[in-house]
Image 1 (cartoon, rainbow, N blue to C red):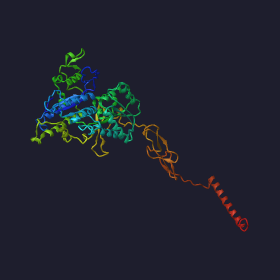
Image 2: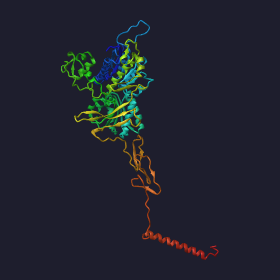
Image 3: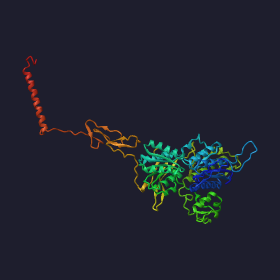
Image 4: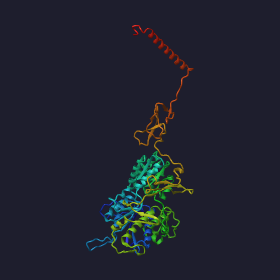
Length: 581
């Protein structure tokens, strides 16, 4: 949609792209996405359109100015994201300049997106030299907080640095010291897992295995990762993976009987309702963006006219997949029906229509409003009734970038601001996958993590958690059970510090501390008890004259005394003799 100022949007509407082998004897074909459409990504892109239309109808924010948009599909892949970045820098329409200065009419004022960290990095590196600000709703890699490399990058979702630390504290809170680690082989997964492992090491947590994969890897690689999880002894698996990658892994695990595991998930997949169909993951816990409410969004999403669907290739693809029909009769096969416009989207069960848990959607909503406020502060003057905006102002993206650093507002009760690194305040909900009476798995909020609170008070649980196999008892995941008092830990050669043997304290020594590496000797007047966990006084024994031993000792004592007296008498009697003298 055209407008006075254009905002770009980059969302992952597909997960794959066609691969062409160019011989460079002809013009290479443009990159093209393929695969089934991601209804969640479509939901995000439509939320951006909703926010822009809401702003255009707002008389307080940018009055008299119409915002337009250019939204592209990045396929969650770098080659396509690079292509999208160039579209943000150039208009499709040719622009000719007869003067010395080239026109920048094709540039967008700011960009919302991308949905992933790696595509966001690619886009940022290309548009940053042109000072075009980028506000992502779902790129969480801690690396993007580096303002020297990404000076134009902002985000409404917290950095993974906070999430990694909160996940390590969560694992420590439940006493798990022996875990498995799975990650996406991408900037999101690798950087996120590196931060988690660093935090976990400080908490004394050991990792049995750490494996990575990507959804485009060969099937043998995915199967190998699944086999590692199946053979492991660690009951707890921490998965720092994107939704698309996690979906591929869970599909592989579901093909064979899978031993029960307690899944700990990152926000990218643990709040995605599409994955709850994998029943063996019931009991999973993890951190997610807080739920929110956006008035009017559901009505906007469901208010799709048949003509609007037919005019958009993306909406056409969504409509055909959702209702298993074809808009064009010529494209339908014998077994397929033709869409007639009577399809009922109101009762459609899809992530596109699901507004029960608006988490990331709210991040898109906030990103659009942050950009709108930055443009407002750059071109509008005065407040409230006296506000005047000049849509003819030659606005440069650099001005929007400068104003974006200073935005601080509240929209629908949600505060929006950025710190020096372009990050918001980190607040997460602790969510739990719980089986409902209907047989479905629901995502339930059971706690909260607020990084702005004092140390030690950031994390709290306010509701019961259902664990794996629908148990209410916290599962145990340790390499070796705790060494009880009376024993000491001896590390197993070649294994992590969480793996050890429990050896009984040696004779004369005790230990009254669980998991101690040393035993202490008792005082000389004490000796260890049978369990060797405490020192007790040695008993005092008295001899009796009625005992045989007492009679013998008394007899020898008397005889010895008599012999001494006799010897002394003999010496005294002969005291004048030369020998004695």
